[in-house]
Image (tube, rainbow, N blue to C red; front, top):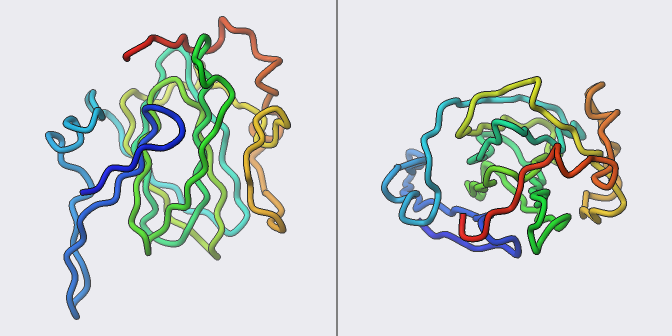
Length: 188
């Protein structure tokens, strides 16, 4: 596998080695020792799958307490996937990275605990899968406004996002108290 560092330290693009022939293809979507060797540590405790239509935007979500690291991938279709560093004290606080994930490129994105995460479906439909390092805890969840102008996320133009009720009332990052967010720990 090939691991590509992004502009946000700790957020990684994983490009699996794919074996293919006229019958189709095969790749390992996770192998603990290999992923740990690239800094993706911890135990995954929950796997999730979502299916969405074009223009569905999910996010920006995070949890505190109980922050989740997420290893995300697209099984069918394509999305623009976004990670935002929202760890208080981080030198990259408020910065984001956006990566196209698709069933064609087979890329994964590692989003460490303490980052906000979201995606928008850019194909007709998409099946999105992700592994989490902690359980979903609704009482710990925060929704950050997907189009917070301070975050400058490069969402696709010409695609009218469709949001859940909870995502429509997401807050701007500057309106969230530091006590609600995770703290940055150097070297963690």
